[in-house]
Amino acid sequence: MKKIYLFFILFPFYAIFAQNTKPSKAEISQIEIIDAEIKEYKASAASDPVTATKKLLQLKEKCEEIHYINGAMTSSMGLVLLYYNEGNYKKTIEESRFVEKYAKELQAFDYVSDIYRMRSNAYGEMGLLDECLKELEKSLIDIDKIKSPNRRIYRKSLIYESYAGAYEKKGDIKKQIIYRQKSIAASIQIPGNEPETINAKYQNLAYQYAGLGLIYSNLKVKDSASYYFEKALEIQESGKYNIYVNGRAILLSDMAKFYNDNGGYHKAILFAKKAEGFEKQASMPYIRKDIYHTLFNSYVETNRQDSSKYYSKLYMSLSDSLLKSEKENLITPVKQIISDKEHENQDNIRNILIIAALVLSLAILIGWLYWRRKNKLVHGKYEDLIAKINAKQSEEDLELQSNVENNVPKSSIVITDETIKALLLKLDKFEKSEKYLRKDLSLTWMANNLNTNTKYLSEIIKVYRNHNFTSYINELRINYIVKKLYDNPIYREYKITYLAEECGYATPRVFVNAFKKETGFTPSYFVEQLKISSILYN
Image 1: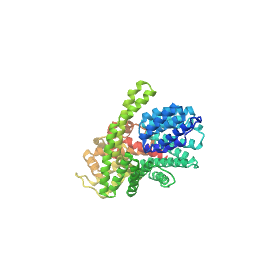
Image 2: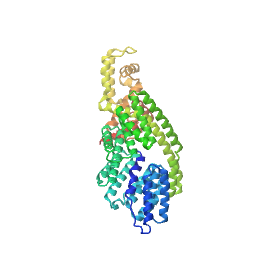
Image 3: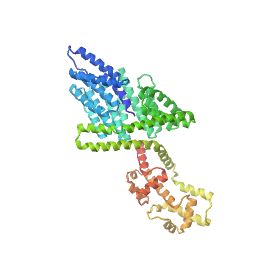
Image 4: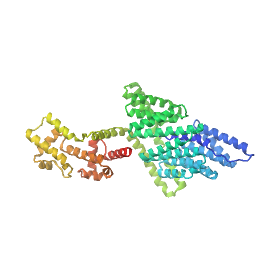
């Protein structure tokens, strides 16, 4: 899910769950004024983040001057959230050091846990996933020291959410699902005896249900995706809870894409138009781009040309603008990584991090653009192949033989019917014998093996198998290895070199090219999708 929503889940709780020290009577009036100002600028952070940042910095300095540690801690936490929400992860991490110091001094264990989690999130956004997971481990160390059960359980639900986000970046779908389910289980345990608590509980539940819906939607598991999306929608439309417009826009956009991908174009338009209305209130360009893309696709499918052209123009214009912005800011995460690592690590790590971050950022950008263009078509070919396997259509050779006997094509050379029948029987035995896996296989060898000549054999393959000799052998070999990979999970662990040798190819490159030509995708992609299916259904 999109990180901007995280800000709106967390921010109110740092005001609600603040821990107060006991100031002297002489200081109480000034402290009350400071507390009221901190609360005011935290509340205005969503609508005016620039002013909120400036004022909270001033309040933090004032609190430090008068040694009001609790005020310094709460104002500093407000700054952490503001920096994180604007994407400035360097400042997020730097400011988090202050919160950590104040929270440990006050033994404010809810803040201790929160600041480790926020720092983890910042590392995660910078691509430093090992550091991200280390900080999450720290967030759980003192969590049982939080006295309030509401605060303790709620923070556990947020930590599990952060774990899910980290494993999403690592590409571990199974753990991502597990931690979203853990976050849901923790949220359900939060008692509903305070309005703020109830709202926070259902905010997180809606967020987790929507996250699971998106996961299953991307994995093409339609029933599960629909179930979780509807659960999230039920919470948002109940009217009982104050769900932020950002979360509404994200959920409705994801649901619109889900229905568009599954042929429900009228529903897709309905949800996308609702999402468009909420997005106008929150201004999230990446969500807006997704909405435009869904509306364009759905209007095309429903033959509404004027609307499809309108949203196509909006989508292309916004995409160009965002791509330009991404290119201009590509170096920013690298600078942030360098700055933070200068604080924590030795100087000789700097150059490695610069190169790694730059290469990673470029790879993500290029990979994302390529995935958007190619993934839908490639995955469709994969699903078609799986459907054929499940329907036992891998025996098309037998069906083809039956068909050609009833409607024999005209051959360009004269071959007697008796010879044709004999050669077709020999071809059938040849295909079942798996002799096509020989590396030294050639048309001459095969003709000698079948006691015929190359001219007759080549003509029979062309007319009755609808192939030339090379493509005929490729089809047999690729069908063989596809079935092995589908039926036997151990084959999915083998290297491409072994798979190539297993089905008779001299080099992995020739094998990969033949596999892609026959199926429309690479053997690596096929293995990856089979592993994902295995995780989901085992």
